[in-house]
Length: 86
Image (cartoon, rainbow, N blue to C red; front, side, top):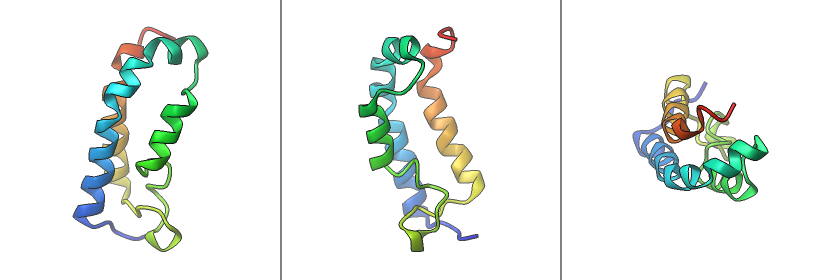
């Protein structure tokens, strides 16, 4: 398992945190459609969320499991307005 550098870790987590306003702004759309709008999914892809577990040699961020959970927690904090949309 590869370990990530502090710079990569902070970049992915900072990028995930920066998605918060976009996710909150799309809360109604996400709740009604029960899926991420393509623009949000694309933004997550561009900031490295979907490749965070892939090794750096394969083009991913190579984040360790603990940092992956921290990124997920960061994204989850943005979805609190969706909690009642189940």
